[in-house]
Image (tube, helix red, strand yellow):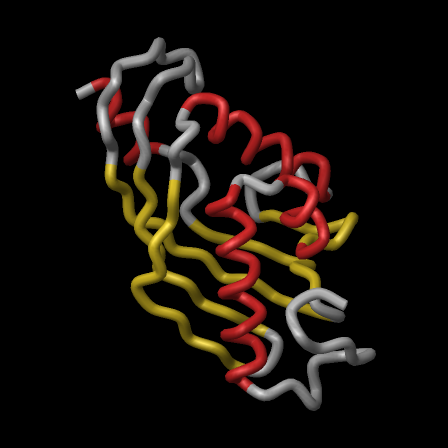
Length: 142
């Protein structure tokens, strides 16, 4: 069981349980623990404007962590409603590896990220948000 609850659907899940679940997910991300992250993501996760599936999710994070080995997210705001989580995060790290064609700059970008997650059975099944890395790339190149 991931995230403190294991129910057939999210109908009986309290908002505090979803917040706790997201905190555990974010902790796994900040540890760069790809195996733990995969446990939070449904194998068939759908992502708006991005390739779907847990493998693509983990591949994207692997690329980020290689370029920014100290990358961390800080939660700014979290809103929970039924099976959905809206998250405002700040991400930052040191650019020491190539990222999306940009060679290492040693810069420390600080970017806002906004995401909408739909969670079922303790796993992310849908995601939409700021995922194009436009702000991050602008800070690396600017």
